[in-house]
Length: 179
Image 1 (cartoon, rainbow, N blue to C red):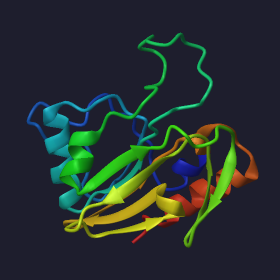
Image 2 (cartoon, rainbow, N blue to C red; image 1 turned 180 degrees about the vertical axis):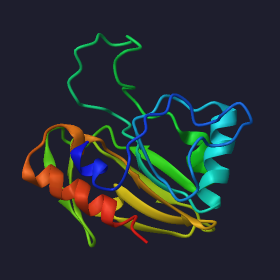
Image 3 (cartoon, rainbow, N blue to C red; image 1 turned 120 degrees about the horizontal axis):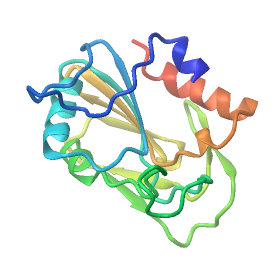
């Protein structure tokens, strides 16, 4: 949170669509979505329009969240255990895939632009029409969508501690969205 505050004011949102159906953020804001609940159709439309208009999105969509939670499975106060964002990802030409045979446990994957801590990560595939660059063995993808940018990460292990490696990874991710 401290790192995010260095980028500007942090404003929590309960919804991505205001009563008019628009994103309740200025067009030049940075939106960080970490393992969000499934989006409503109105939120999908608002998010897409906001990004295409110049918004910047850092999205963590973990298909198999391994983080500890004090809340029981299914308790609405706990985190979403599996990302359910297929409609908006598909609209942007992305597909999040999960390899159930991958080994469990924390490890660091090294890419061209960054290194990421992961544990049971998802990987993105990109459609032919998408304007995206895949990094970190498919776990991260940076896409130009309209006038906006989306950096999607198929794992949320960067939030599973505050060690120097995780802080460096988050710093690197945020730098990917600087204009």
